[in-house]
Length: 202
Image (cartoon, rainbow, N blue to C red; front, side):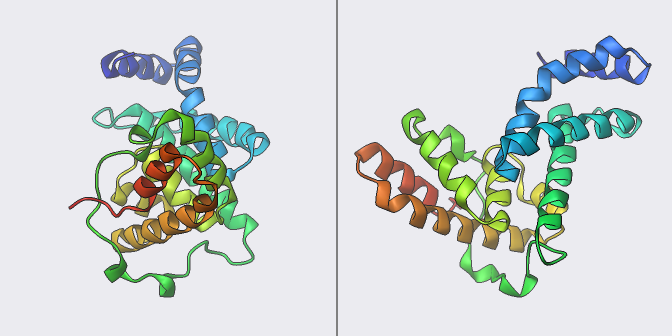
């Protein structure tokens, strides 16, 4: 469905049309559920997080700016909720320790989503590796390469600077490569790992 049709549904939902919001739920639930599952590394928790994200979006429809993609706005709400859940899991109040970030360790960000560059046969292997990563590394990778958030959007969700986002992504990709490398028995897997570990293009 194109963005204009989505905006019309949003306007209907804003006016109290339950069917309009139900259609939005049906359209975007798969995207939200996948994002939550990748962020939380738990299908069962993703179901609850998805429900919460849609409830929050329904309450906040009046604040939605139609100049923005509704999908991006909705995924941002879901991501904020999931990051809060990850923080609650942690023994610290923050997932990230700002002292660990070194802006010299990263390159200029690339707009190309990782999932568009991975071959289908190794994508599940990548997903398994993501789920095994610590929360602070998994979260930015999922937001960047599966939700297609830019660095500023990731920083807003995680309450870190753009440079910190870039550094965290650099370290996360390195960790993911280390996890996947022993399983790289085929050329396709090796190629995928090189893509994961390669720094963004300038």
